[in-house]
Image 1: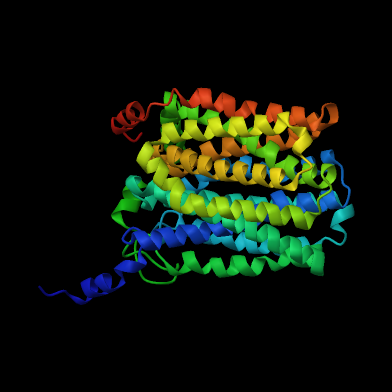
Image 2 (image 1 turned 90 degrees about the vertical axis):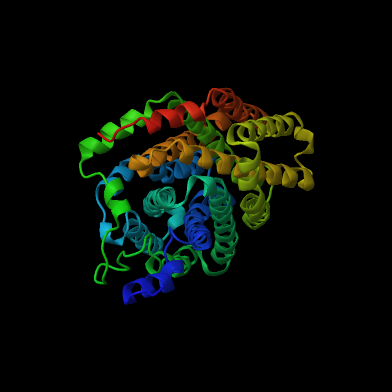
Length: 444
């Protein structure tokens, strides 16, 4: 059998397209999720720990975390833009991924313009907001591209690799960022992280979504039929179709569960640096090392075990198991404050919490992707994640409010209410009924 020249080129280059090569998909999305972890590690963990070390109050630190969480909460305003507009000949989401990476580089550099960040929290919040904005922007584009090109049977495994990679990126940026802050100063340390982000930007630049598409706007290529068929060309159609799939019972239940879980994430992520540094007298270096070690361990297990467990036992069952263990863990820690002075106990708590939360995130991501309708997948999935991040901002804000009126043990007990409520909600998810409804949908 003979091939013409165009066919030979496609055969030769077939491994360079995300839809054609599962290994390339896993590597690409792992790299992009490492890039997502970098801004999160710095803004949500390294900077709050640095502020705690410099005796900023819980209210000031919680306010900073709440502000930088805003872009992650309002990603839903970004997603419809990506579903509506794109350079279709370069892929449905790849142009937006590249743009998000570029913005992330520039926003990291912008923090170097703050003369005295410790005593100018307003400017610090603005720069942190910009970093979070482009981090959230890139996150939306990456998730949308993943839903477009990763087949449903591979989504749980892909989510395990993606979330594990993000965790490792978060941990490494925290420990490296903290070391650089202590060694060369705050502004230089944060701005230097743009170098790593610049290297990762080469990944979406070098690989295309589908055969025949352009690598860059000025190169040869055209939009694929799959992209053309899935693309919506009016805001009216996007929001009508989004509303139609979002009001399905399982979709509404997941929205509520994700918001409630976001409160837990916001509470724990914000209180841990304050609790360990100001209550237990840790340094920001000790905190960053403990966080990094525990989350890297959790990330590695998540990459190779988390997705497999969801595939084997099912999403709903694993969600329930993770939530039960989280409730027991947080309540147990709250009831034994006499052990908080024992470093191994606190280390074990942090390790188990992040291991379980990573596994929980893998399961919830896979659940969200399965409930998505491909026609409005980026916007729908972003709606889920935006609600989770909205809850996270609420949780971060609650730390300052709760700590002013009660002791740490009661703060932990209140935190345990979030996974308890989520556990009840997810029992009512019905995947089969949801998928049957989507199959009967017609694009408006």
